[in-house]
Length: 216
Image (cartoon, rainbow, N blue to C red; front, side, top):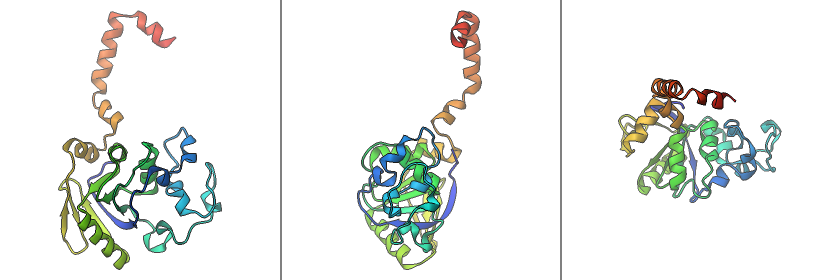
């Protein structure tokens, strides 16, 4: 998982409440057994005018020119601001996969659905909760100033606006530790790889018949 320390990125606004995970990545794309390739289908039903199916060449699709991510001023955005209850609906982990694979490193909103919020941290996306009034002001500034970018300093737990104003945010210490070091659940386990190998060797020495069972 890509570590998150200091990130500066163009901001895109998702000006809708209750954006659910089926809107983030529609159900037909959940058939894939891979964890890659979901970025082109992020917000698929809003982003395109035609029906999307797995395996389609994105270049053959009909983009919706009115959708925010298709507008030239937001091309290359890596920070998303959203309204209340972002990520509600089903618990599909494909939603943060799609956001991360599109290029988003952070999402700022007044509130998130709990499961989506947890899944973001496990997949290298930083969800930041700010008061609704602060988020509303960010929307106004993003709409008003093309090229609006924010700097997110996770070690210091602040968002730095273009004018230098800092917005502090809270993050649970363990989640912060994992993101700063780039540890997903597998990465956390692999920190103890030497101990795991030692344990397995000792266990096989005491119970050698397990080697045949495991190999067979």
